[in-house]
Length: 435
Ligand code: UDX
Image 1 (cartoon, helix red, strand yellow):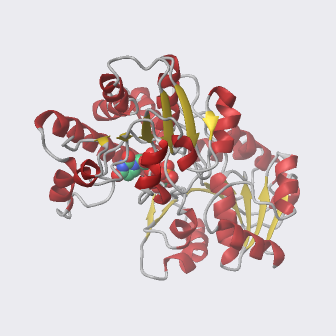
Image 2 (spheres, rainbow, N blue to C red; image 1 turned 30 degrees about the vertical axis):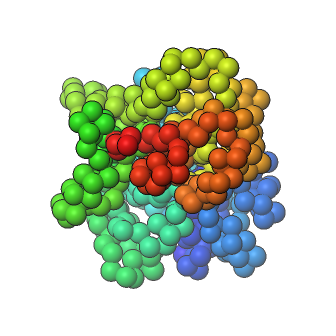
């Protein structure tokens, strides 16, 4: 099939590349000339494991190309995906100016039947707005479909190629058939394509992310209780996760969820609810719990140092909001760094992928190390903020040699509490006994 993808951000680039991978011809369109030039010449613009290889292959085999020209890019396409940003507006609701702006442009360009697909996470009712924006200029036949993505950063290629499910929101038989054909190669293993109306598809995306965020905030509150009652959240997690109704995944307590999706989508769903006079109480609590959880380690650190962080030096392992990404949006590490600096402490940090982004955002108010061990020189304590695999079995002897004090505050529960005690560390983690 011939496909156009408008927007070469994270979702657009992963989707475009993966659609090309099964033999479709994909043209990606973006207004950013520099980016388009880069991509067209074979330089990938995001960090996503496994993506570069298939990006290069499809580029070389001429199934993937890039342009800044919308008219040219969509000319031969049967399906046009909109993968545009929907940033939170001032009141937290999703801002649709990019999506509706392109829809209006499309209205002026369409000359024959095409399927226009909302891939971005958009509030309920957006498909209708897109339809109206196009129909204002184009009187011919077209369909608008809602097809939300459920990609996790770090495993997005796998999530795309073998999705748990594909949600297609359309009431048009014609569009349904085309979308079904497009996705057939991705659901060969039998996972479902779930057809529904546009509004339900739009809400499905928000409901999925909000539910997962709720699971995490719930476990973070259980962890708080564990700390106060002397229980071990790891045991509770296993105890409840074996119940299939609850499930083992997404029950890991930590220092809060971050990233581009959960915080934004939870906020947007609260706002959407407000707009129809519904007070979404659970989600408001989920948000508050998460805000507090990002700084959960702070009181522990302050308590250990008798409220005197001035002049103390901290090592931080991990800056990205989660492993296998360089994304630092809403990353708990940044909240911790800000709080430490405000107390007069100094920080040296290391992250395998995200340091360039942090440098760009906060500059040299902290030091950056070339590897995890170099952060530890003269450190009064180590704080672990992201669970990169390479932090899981470190050389503890080397750590001991470098650190001023053997003190670790672990926001991701990487190590066994008893083993750390045996090694002589003062070790605090989330929701587990101190020993
Ligand atoms: C998420 C959704 O999973 C994906 O389906 C959607 O399309 C986009 O948003 P992503 O933001 O890439 O994906 O991250 P994810 O792996 O889901 O993790 C989100 C956050 O939750 C991270 O900050 C992570 O550290 C945190 N998390 C996750 C926990 O704190 N505990 C857990 O048990 C799982």
